[in-house]
Length: 226
Figure (cartoon, rainbow, N blue to C red):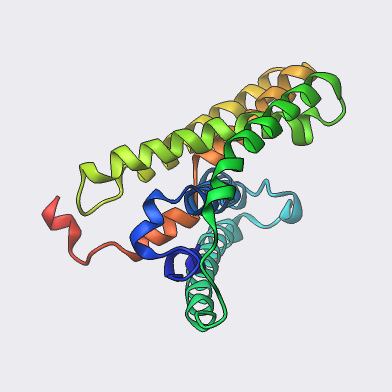
């Protein structure tokens, strides 16, 4: 994300918001591979001492573990953003502008075809449903909802990214409900669908990368202007 934001060769700044490939890489890939709902779930597991790796830890260490997890994740994310930006500056003399005509023309049919193929595989291949296929089926709707929520919601408040904030909160709340539903229902197919909704829809609806970018860009003293 840092590389894409700082780069002005592959994607000229004046055309970034209207370039489908840039939107797909930034909002689609980076926004979906970094999930805010799973981040909050991890913090909850540290605080409740239910993380598989640290199960059985002393109660007094739970708050410290949660703070270390949250601070470490945000620090690494901000550091990665800066590293990517510096790499973009370093590589300016080596890159050339990409030809977008054929990539933009192929993106829609290829993406739609791959999603249809995943839906067919989810119907036919039972053993992959819970781990991969249902998540892939529900991922595109989550990413699309996040894109439009940010596009429409962020301009509503000049100093605060309202759209991204709302989808992160909504996705985290939905994930909590889905986890409760998985514990309440024992059916294999039901649990696979709920797991796919949590990993796919909620995972792509929420984003850490955009959250970090917008946190870094917040103006000082913005609370007094709301």
